[in-house]
Amino acid sequence: MVRHFDSELQDLRDGLMAMAGQVEEMIDLSQAAVSEGSSGKAEEVKAMDRLVDEQELKLDQACIDLLALRSPIATDLRLIASSLKIIPEIERIGDHCCNIARRVPYIHPPILAGDALERLAGETRGMVRQAVDAFVNGNAELAREVIAADDKVDVLYVQIYKDLLRIMLADPLCIERASNLIIVIKNWERIADQATNIAEEVLFILEGVNVKHPYLHQPEG
Amino acid sequence: MPITDHQEQKPVKLRARNLDFSYGDKKVLDGISMDIFAEQATAIIGPSGCGKSTFLKCFNRIHEVSSEVRVAGDLEIDGVDIFRGGIHEVELRRRVGMVFQKPNPFPKSIYENVVFGPKLFGVRDRDILDGIAEESLRKAALWDEVKDRLKESAMSMSGGQQQRLCIARALAVNPEVLLMDEPCSALDPIATAKIEELIFELKKEFTVLMVTHNMQQAARVSDYTAFFWLGRLIEMGPTERIFTNPRDRMTEDYISGRFG
Ligand SMILES: Nc1ncnc2c1ncn2[C@@H]1O[C@H](COP(=O)(O)OP(=O)(O)O)[C@@H](O)[C@H]1O
Ligand SMILES: [Mg+2]
Image (cartoon, rainbow over all chains, first blue to last red; front, side, top):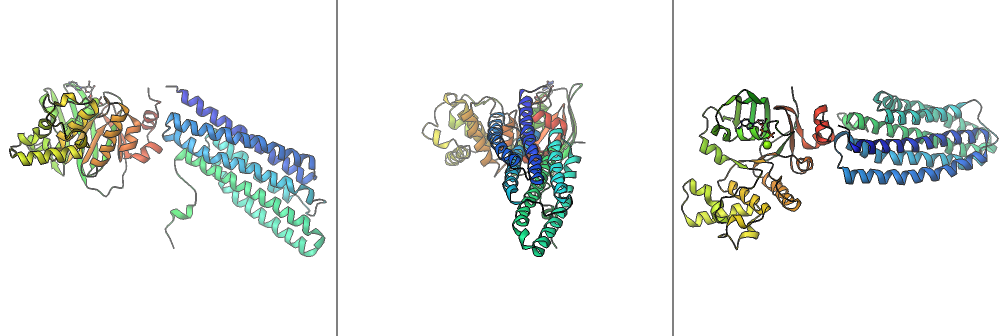
């Protein structure tokens, strides 16, 4: 039987997808702003955030309406409850992009050799993309890959962080740029965490199992 | 094999094992195995005609009245066989009370309705009967509404009051189990809410086994939910689990309105 409700749920999925598409663009743009030192792109990122915030309000309301009017259960319920948790994660990703954009005036000329920053940003963006794909296509495999990828991002983050510390110790003239870059990489690392949270929600929707905080499910000791 | 799960500490009150039931050639229940726990409310859901009422009636052997009935398998109350003469049928019906879809009070006074059972069992003492009437009406959350009009006809009550009267009448013989077959389907939302609150109270003392077509009602009042389909138990489990994470696709489709 085809339910009217199913098309409403599809609207919710589409809305989340559009919102996620918006922040993916913001990640790209903030990364470009960082590597090019482009204040124009940095401003563009900040402007896009308003759209993300508007989408958040709209989708929140849609979820509340569906809960109130459709009394969802089982998979339907898990989808809506998880959406209510995924929406703020996406919104936070937008905020992180703005934080990164705000650092752009203070990080040039570049002090880091190599492509470590690009790799961190690329890895992070890939995780967001995969988490959203996993949500849209109901792909548990992909969601698990996202969760696994978070460790890679953490390793990359620590590596860049240590490089920046070394640079600061070696040359006090780099301290301002390095400390601003630390804020930049911290925000990317947080975006990867957000992608991981989304992937965990996707697994909950698909399998009904809460995979968060695995240590709580292990015997103590 | 049906999916069943529980982590119940309460004892098993009613037990069905491989229960088959046929009206003539028509098999209505097909190998039902199910544990129903004491002091818990268990809801049976499923499409019309899947055998829910038949299953309920087996527990106090009402079906025996009709002919052409064939039963196989085991049914127990407190571990004692129900079918093969372990319990006299009058005693069984005292221990296992039943409330039907449509309130069916006798065309007598409110008081006489409640004390009908005890009188049948030979209680004659007026004071004792008065005590039973008050206690039963209180347990059925009806006392305050009717205490000043006990002599009035039960037929003058509202549908919701009549249904609670039928519950009081069932409680008057001190039962252990209450079977309720769609007890709210003829009632308005307020009367329904009152019965649901009542079930919540009753299950602290009794074993409640109910049939409902209202998913939200099953979700609100029951501790366990069992899904029947074409005479078979498809899935049974804690109500929270069934309504958030059913394991069988048919259960999921039925409770979320995708069926058919
Ligand atoms: N007395 C009877 N004689 C013959 N068939 C019956 C009788 N009572 C019920 N049935 C049939 O048994 C099946 C199950 O009925 P029932 O237990 O009332 O289902 P439910 O309560 O789930 O709607 C139905 O197909 C119904 O038509
Ligand atoms: Mg029925």
